[in-house]
Length: 250
Ligand code: PEP
Image (tube, rainbow, N blue to C red; front, side, top):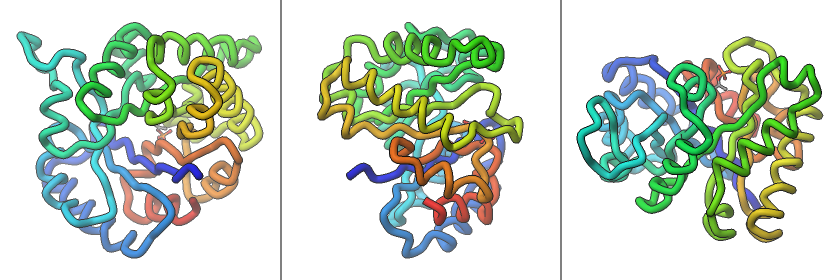
């Protein structure tokens, strides 16, 4: 039985004060919720304060990115060791905005995934096709290549323990969502591929989220699909009401 993971990717939103105020409200809104795992992924500056605020709650912490090295002369970067110490359980890797604006390749993502696992962080590895790739009928080819390269060299046990987020690029922040059937089809395809890479047991255990304009109105149908094990939520995770409603829909 896979426990759905609802993760809020705050991107570059919320100061420390706003972040702490938000999680106070979220804790109240989600008190007593069971059967799902909830994570918030604030900007780096708010991680420490949010970690303190989440102590003893049923909400866990994630980061939005990290460097592959443990430490070093990499101005402006944050290492897996730092994230682990601060209390992060998850780290989002290879988000399409990192790929698009910061030139991250599948090879970069692969190195980061290995570093995260080495330090006891659970990677949420993002993959997804662009609009022109979907329209040209290349979704599975593109997503398949991203999965193979980003997760190359991992054992079945490592694959079983991580999270993959299928996020069609054309659905992120656009208000346009993949239909539940289309999202299910790609998630099932990813699971098949992971079975080839790491065995049936790993594929059965790995959680594969959907992300891309998930909101309270479409969450239940998307999350009701057999191969959709939760959601990575951007815009709608910034308000307690909408994120809380999505969690409850799961
Ligand atoms: C995201 O940033 O991962 C995302 C899915 O954003 P949104 O929900 O706003 O489309």
